[in-house]
Length: 461
Ligand SMILES: Cc1cc2nc3c(=O)[nH]c(=O)nc-3n(C[C@H](O)[C@H](O)[C@H](O)COP(=O)(O)OP(=O)(O)OC[C@H]3O[C@@H](n4cnc5c(N)ncnc54)[C@H](O)[C@@H]3O)c2cc1C
Figure 1 (cartoon, rainbow, N blue to C red):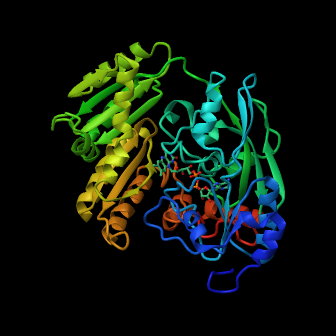
Figure 2 (figure 1 turned 90 degrees about the horizontal axis):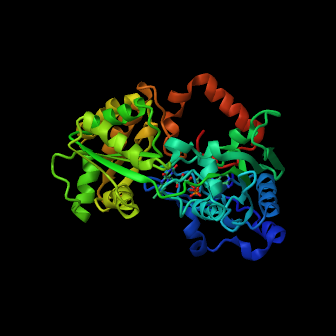
Figure 3 (figure 1 turned 60 degrees about the horizontal axis):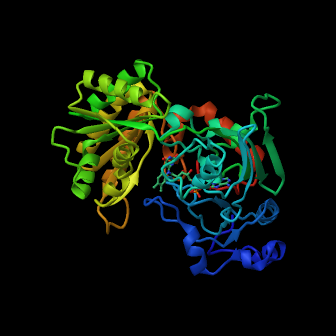
């Protein structure tokens, strides 16, 4: 493998192939492409950055990389929280940001064709012009791309009702290691021809190929802004029990989010929410159907029956937005307290109360401050481990607490990552979840598609 300190790859040849101005080698120009949003990962030094503008550019880059054994790090918005887009030494960073055309919105078939570098929110706005929506909505929707969302199988707030990115994709254009262009899937609502290669690339974190465009499913856009319910509980466990009760009542909210007391305190210190000390968890739920007002009232009644210390429903769109803003304030509020290492585990929904207990115990045992926000309707928790700014690296106690949290998720029948991916930071736990046979199949697939091992090396496997 080429390293920054060793043989330099012949970048001149790449410049000839795709045009000099789109191949960056100046360290200052490359700096903005080197790291993602994972504070615990110090990226390597790339050999160059390619600003691809077409599938042909991607193909030429991957052909060159294969010939010269140069590691390739595909990059969308660089918002990864798992170190997935962080540079490795001597790599080519392949940025898809300039491939940002929405090639087609087809309202009749409720599909869109978008290039990999389109921002999630831009696609949703384009769909809105036709009364449709692109449902997967990671909180990073303004800064993350369709390609990155596909590569990580991103989730989001409304996934509890509409599913994750995988549920919204019908087909892909992918450039394989070496430069071959593969088309997977279809444009039709149904279809089972051949293996499901589309799903294989979804969540593959840039380790199997580079997604250049996708055919995506759109959905009917709700006619009005969702109605919102907010309920406060004396403990996170009580809030989690209310989540179970809402779903057991067969209510299907379009959003169901739970915040713990550390998060509420952080928001309160910043914005003075006025919640009393008795509120130690806040559940926020939305419904986006025409019967939204009745549905949120039904959820309020379930929460009241589950011991809520307060429960309120919105009476206008403005109020509804205000209640949801509490959820949106959570990360910026936590970020004010120190460096946030945002983690991501998922457990069966009914195990949420146990999982939150295990997170609290891990924090206490290792003396680490953890604030947790959960996409509770999916059993997906984001414990945010906060440590002092100015420390040169993640303190050992944070890793010990994180280790305990990851193992607890597995013990409870859950998974290491609900939506952020394995990236660089969770590789050491991967075998524990997958087991020997699954891991061997993973390696066999990787070897078949990337025999030289140059696609995002050091990530996932
Ligand atoms: C404030 C904030 C909030 C977030 N909220 C959420 C959330 O609610 N839900 C959620 O799921 N995630 C969330 N994330 C994490 C992150 O936004 C997602 O993982 C997102 O899908 C990454 O998209 P990106 O375009 O930024 O990809 P990048 O960060 O550039 O890359 C992510 C991974 O995908 C690979 N990749 C990128 N583009 C391609 C491509 N075209 N082909 C092949 N591989 C590619 C990269 O190599 C890397 O492994 C959040 C992040 C931040 C900073």
